[in-house]
View (cartoon, rainbow, N blue to C red):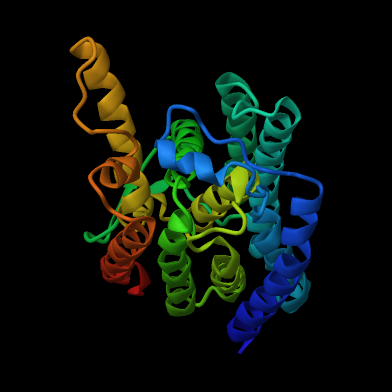
Length: 328
């Protein structure tokens, strides 16, 4: 019941917030500047309000702080840790979005600034989970039931780089109306199902709130998008997805459950590497991968449904992959 309530509160508050925020951001001209090296038809989106991630962040926050209060009173505060961690990543994204709006171009914080801020926050979060006993330096391998012991410091450093990489992979996926929202809903549902299976209600409260917030946001973000989530939303989303994996002490699940993020990032890396290696040749018509499919004629709606469908399939596969985790 608490998970359904968390979902409902988050969805309802997010819808209300969207109804208020979308026209307000239009009024103050908080519009997105479109990259000049992206698909030319995206230029028509110039001026669409950004920082829309505030819609689902508000809904999730209200839900977690209200429906998760009973768990917190019993000393289980992991949902608050997850929310705080994602919120700090969102703050980094907000700074980036604010700089873009101030400069009136698609350039915010430098790559180094974002990397260092994200790395510091990731190390602090992993350390916090270790201190409170939610995370162990034992790496669970999905599909096998095997856990591999690791040196604590090595694990912490590896985990921090995994978080930074995953957060930015989610950010890269946010390039087409509704795409990262649709891809992330099955991921949030996966975490909710796992939390129920493993008897982790506080984790479930957050993941259910995340699901509700994203579904509500899709009302405003589906093609043609009335608002973009911006780095404010995509970095929060990336932080939340990583935090849930680490709070459940199974970070490797990020590979199958986040397969779309992984493929999108790999396509970008492969494109850059091949371009430099061959002095100007390309494997994809444009990277990341969703732009390649746009260039060969896929509509944004087709991209949304195909990529979201792939994410849903792998969410189911990932759930099967971790069943041995719950064997006593």
